[in-house]
Length: 372
Image (cartoon, rainbow, N blue to C red):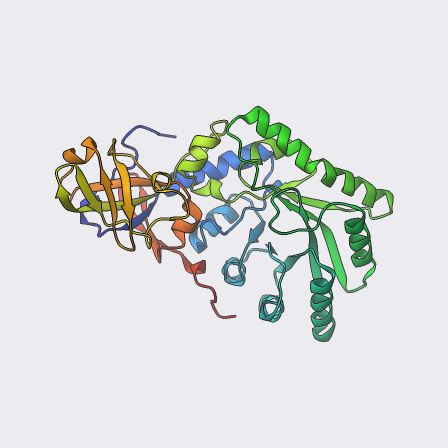
């Protein structure tokens, strides 16, 4: 895969209005192929749609042999179902109105198997009530907390009893365990490996005990992006990374032990130069993920020495000697530090194939609702 310093340039780029999102499908395919090679079989991948939210990229994944997907919202689930995905996990515990919407998915797309997460008995009971009232099956995975402290139940004796009780429910198909370890992102692969092994040891132990109790099939869906290289070597689990399709600057820096390459960039222009050593770009909060510090929001591929000093809704301003080399109207290519929320800020991505503008991909599932 070509990865020269000018790989991102293409004909017609000067005609694009900014800020803009650009995707390079050939590089996306490289990343898909890399992920499949790492796990050895597309059946061991359940990629997360939260990163791309795109029907076009979903079709690329399907064409590569991937048949099971993961998502965070009902809209993402519906987008996947519309593309004919046969197996969709809503990596969320539905509560409130989301319960009704979840079962509407089953009614609207009967050719797709839908599952969700549970980590609480009361929430599981509400799902079972709705399942019984509609005479629809309920397929779930138990969500485990392996250290991130975001969702999930601890993999302990209470979780074993909870799982066993769900297994005995005739209307419930509990398929296995789900564990996300987004808190582990050490750049040192040896330390990361040690932390992954420690985090997942209770998960392996829980599966072993469930099997001992007579539950023969316990699937494990494990990990996000930082642990992917480690978990890919475990044959008895399904990996669910998301960012690999587009990649970003944060993981480029932290995960140097992988072969993924950036495949999505933002374009921005210099719109003002208040002082000789200060420039303002049109890449505001509404155009780039802004949860990180100013210096960890975008990495410029064709400009250096820029120090971020301020960020507002429609503007990003920089200073330093590097700013003196830029003029109003100059076009800059930036790699997001966090690509997932950046993608959600754009209605569409412009696609570039062989240095030519090829079309665009709509970010359909950035919406909270499609038809359901």
